[in-house]
Length: 330
Ligand SMILES: [Zn+2]
Image 1 (cartoon, rainbow, N blue to C red):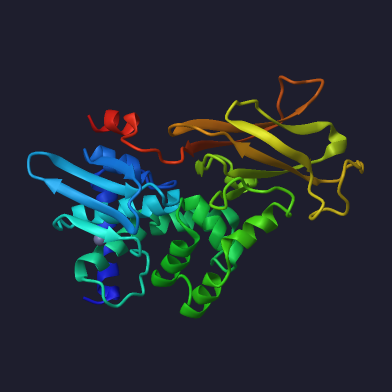
Image 2: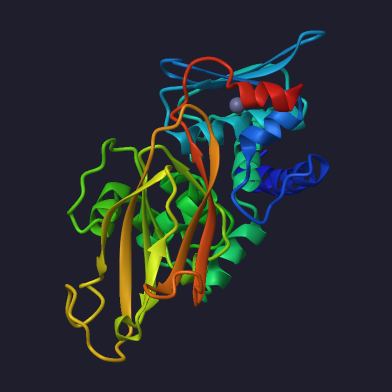
């Protein structure tokens, strides 16, 4: 079986799995929740050079063990890969950490199917279309857009670039150029070099008006930049609805975009207000509303506009079974 055949079969299988398992596909795919819905136990353990394994014991159920040392996006990909093995009814398998190397020629048919399944499961065509439609773009073109899309999907930069190529949304040449760019540089640019990340794996999300109502998956320690327009002279100012899950590190007008930075008020001028938000450490996944209201200081109960996103903060994976998944699986 070549990759094209595997990919076609996997696209079909992944959309069947979404339907059969009732997985919503209008926002980032809850792959851990999908496993729980199937009664599959998830365990997170340091696994050295192993990526993940799926173990089915007749009478004892099915478990997926994931390398707890891997970044969240990679753990999600690993679980989707193992769900692919389950969907295709492959026997128990142990996958090495290099399951992402989609170019590898030596893969067995089963591995090609599971890998392609993971891509389509986490990056369904409709969700990529949704991302592009919100931004009014036809094709993903720049590394910045690939990174942005990867955060919208909850996937890694690399697997997103590869998927765009294998799903014929980008040429091989373009995808290769993307893969030469390191996401670290994109993150640094987003933060203007002003803020250090606690962890090099942490991501820097950028939300603008087009993201209103779109759920986001973030991880403890990630930064969320929220950039919203306002006319300072109108008196209406954006304000973050206080929430213990978030801290405001920075709040000012975006100098890079306008004619000047700082707090200079030009009557009637439209400015971009920029908030840099930190996300707190959590022991377990939590869902929190990130809500901004535009209001006048003297009319605090009559917001003119609202911007909101349901943010899911995923903990750095700890050892053992997170109780929430056990509950969901029961
Ligand atoms: Zn595999």
